[in-house]
Length: 124
Image (cartoon, rainbow, N blue to C red):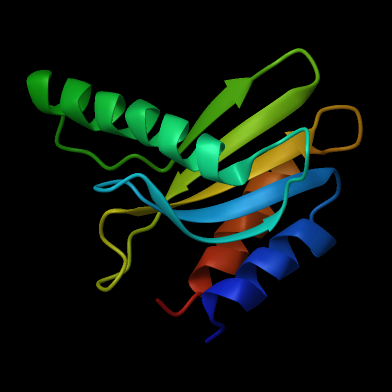
C-alpha cells in the first residue's frame, strides 16, 4: 500500500499526458495532497471546484433514487480531460482522485485503467 504523495506522484509520472493530480475530501473541498499542476492549473482551486461537481452528482443520484455508485466523472475541455474518480475503500469514503490530462498526449481509456490501478494501491 502506498501513501498519498507516492500515489499522486505515480499518477503524474506514469500516466501519459498527466498535467496534475490531487486527492480531495469532498465534504470539505480541501486537497489532501497534490502533484503537478503549476501556473496554468492551480490544483487547490480545481479541488474546491470539482468538489461542487461531485456533490451535485451525488445529490442528483439521491433525488433520482439511484442505488448505484459513481465510478468516475469525466469533463472534456477543448484541450484537456479532467477525470474524477470517487474512492470506494472503507477508509476512503468522501474522497476522490482528480486527474487533469493533456488531451493531445493522453489516452483516456488507459488513463482510466491506470488510475483504477493506482487507487487500489492507495492507503489513506
